[in-house]
Length: 265
Image 1: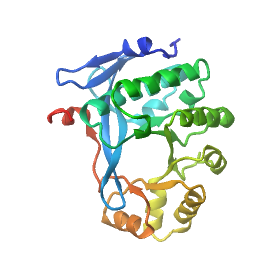
Image 2: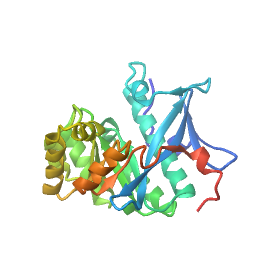
Image 3: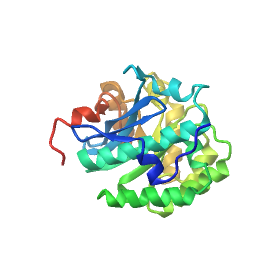
Image 4: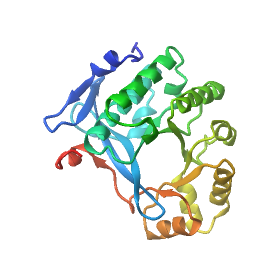
């Protein structure tokens, strides 16, 4: 049975550094790499990047992320470890190759509610952000809109992160597991709207997206539209006066390997 990785030493034993200088992890026979996708403000100015995990098997085949993490062959402890190792490599690669703007890091609810030594884990992560020359205010933790076994524990843990100065974004809002109650309790800085609501909006089904925007304004949260894949979606975002946009029309995710061809900032 896999042990949950909590300390810096336990996590770093799975890290590797390429000749080009980027970090990746090897865990349970899989290679984990960072990709970054740009996020822009409504004016088109770069706001930051979302860090995305790319997983490869021993033969070098790229795996589909969602089916991989939802596999019955991946235990809860392993899911938590993949989640934490991903944040470790993303943070280091961002600090070394980008560093400007904000960084959005995905955070799975099962990793958040792993309560044993949770505060110690959070303190260690916040300390590492400072050591890398970044500010905690640059970091947005994206809480994935997945079903959670204990929303109370989840909300308390997120509030603890906010107490350190971190920002919280609710990711994929509008999917099946979305919880308005959780969102109201968390009081996120940003609500990231699932792409399905944007696609429905441009096809004439506007009520759902407008309700989410209304909720965000009520909570004084900013709105980030995901899935801006073409000009029609981009124009809709401009018309709705959302705060931020993300999608292939804005920019595709780029593996950190590609960023290594440039001199680090």
